[in-house]
Structure formats: C-alpha cells, structure tokens
Length: 157
Image (cartoon, rainbow, N blue to C red; front, side, top):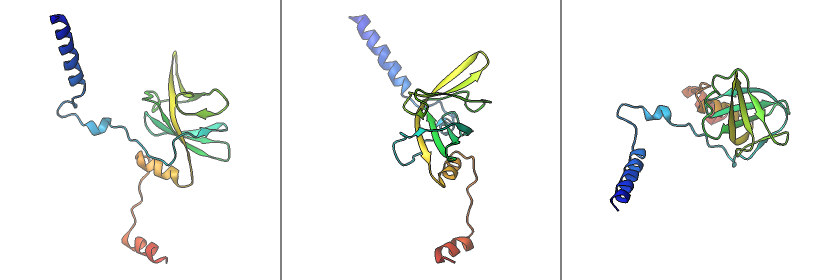
C-alpha cells in the first residue's frame, strides 16, 4: 500500500514539475512559436513542381511552384531542425501533390542522415499574402507611412 502511495506522489510531483514555467532569467518569448493565422483550414495542396522556396524558421517555409507561379505557405508538424540550414530540400508525396496533415513530408538530406519533416498544413497564398507572411516572420521590413502619404490615401489623391 505504501509503495502505491509513494508511486502516486512521485507521478504527481513529476506532472506538477512539467507544468511549471521556465527558470528565472530565461526569455520564454524566444522559444515561442510564431503561429500565423491565415484564412481557411490549411488544407490546400501543392500542385506542380517546386521551383524555389524561402525558409521562414524551423517550422515554416514558402514554396514557389512552376504551375502559374503560385506560392504556398507550408508549416511542418513539429520542429524541423535542419530546415534553416539545408542546402537543398526534397519532398515525399503519395500522389504527385504535396498535402498537409502528416501524409506528405519535407526531406532534408544531410550526408548519412536524412531528416523527414511531416507537413502539418498548407495555405495557397494570394496576391499580397507573401509580403504579410514575410513581415510576420521578420523577413521583410514593414514600410511605415509618412503622415502625408497616409493623408493622401485617405483623401484619394
């Protein structure tokens, strides 16, 4: 009976310890994931060959396809440690298109080790969305409007 009670107490203390915050002095904001909210459910698929990409962080990238020069915002499910430093990317699909929800993946070859990063969600980007995504991840500078140009836009001149 005492062993069960001791085991229960140990499990409870481990659970409480796992729920506590970071140690004093640790910048938690640095470890926070920059979730980007886009319209839709992230259930788009990438059609056509990937011709280029822009890595945003260890969780996300923008893919550019040859099919009418479309762009897609892609988030991996979890963390893809080699994404930022990869020289090349491969893709694993099941039916000639990349889709999310862990069925397809980004492959990062690195010598003898290959990292497989399941795709979590994909959003097709419309005109103007690319700049918004790049600004969200700190990859593009936000243009500040001068008071004169903002007044001109308001008056329509």
